[in-house]
Amino acid sequence: QVELVESGGGLVQAGGSLRLSCAASKDTFSRLTLGWFRRAPGRERAFVAAMTGSGGTTYTDSVKGRFTISRDNAKNMVYLQMNNLRPEDTAVYYCAARFGAPSRFVTEYGYWGQGTQVTVSS
Image 1 (cartoon, rainbow, N blue to C red):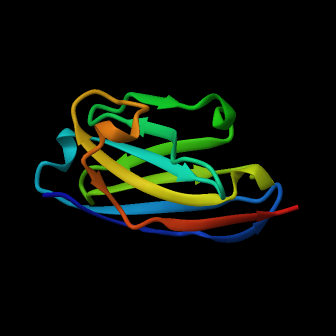
Image 2: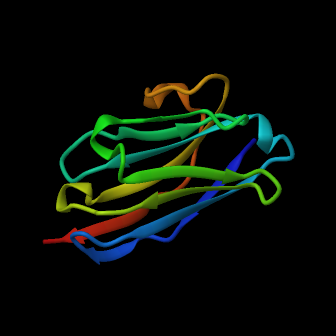
């Protein structure tokens, strides 16, 4: 069982930055692929970024160059640094984990946090 707890959401103006954090409870944290997803109002949960235990990353096109996923295996933490935020980035952001290769599909992640709200004002 993996427990995930997100933090760091909030309200920010367009062009601003936020850093989301996710704490994971698992001794085998370094083996996990960790992902960030988001659910915008009225939309389905969607992939944002993922990172393997060895550091490989993948991003959805709309956040490339603005968002950076990173992890600290010693602290069992994963982060999402979000820069140059846009109103369309407004969503509930979720941390997710799986054993295996990175995936963009919600159904392939078995562990989820409770979500943290990010609101970007124009």
